[in-house]
Structures are given as C-alpha cells and as structure tokens.
Image 1 (cartoon, rainbow, N blue to C red):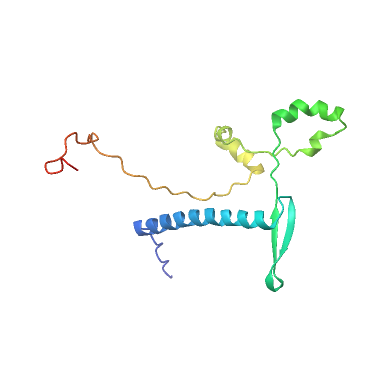
Image 2 (cartoon, rainbow, N blue to C red):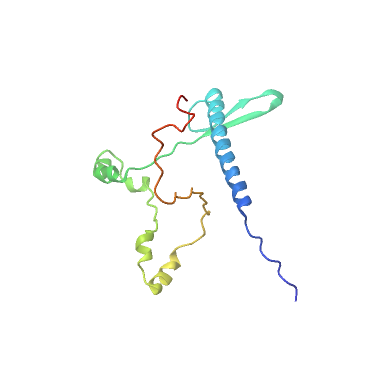
Length: 155
C-alpha cells in the first residue's frame, strides 16, 4: 500500500508572509476603490444601471452603478395601513422577509432537536480569520525615568 505523504505544517515565516500580503491587499483594495470612483465620477452620471464611455481604438468602458435599498421594518409596519389608504393595496408584495438563523437560540436546542431542525438549514464553513497580537508585558510596567541618565542631561 502506498504511503500518504505528511501534511505540510505552517511556520512563522508562512504567517509573516500572510500578514504582509494581507497589508498589501488592504492597501491595493483601498487604492483601487479610490481610482474606480474617480474614473466613474469623471466619465459617468450617478444613476442606476450600465453606461458606456467610448475609448481610443474602439474600446468601450462600461460603468454600472447599483443603489442599495434597505427597508426600515419599524417604519414599514407603522405605515402599512397608510400605504393601503394611498393606493398601495398589497405593500407586503414590495418587501421580502428573509429568514435568518438565530444562532444563540439554535445552540440551546438538544442534539435531537438540532438534528431535526438541521433539515431546513445549510451549514458551510466560513472563511478563517487570523490575528497577530503583541505579548502582554510581564510584571509591573516600568515607569519612565524622571531623571535623565548621566551624560544625557541636556538632550
């Protein structure tokens, strides 16, 4: 039978490489977004949909913009009857109610209840996160000197 090669183990060098890439990526994302907004605002109108800008050599730059619409649930509920009075006969058809798992309550289910409830949910792993923290100082923090060391009095 063939032997399975051992899984490689991450090192602190791998972690340092990841951290450097993470910082570079954040910087690149921010720079790309600034430049994208600059170009869009220079060449296109701020309106929903796709627009085009003719370029040299027959190339075309397409710019598209979407707007995010969020329904304030409390306001919607308060105005529901007034919508009908204003001729919006079925206001509920304008809003989608998206079910979302309440993880705290889900975690309180018994194993049997959870197994039964799991029929209606899909569980997939999220992206892992990494964080590097500085070590905590040991002992009492040293107070800064109140008198300059000898030879540094005039610095």
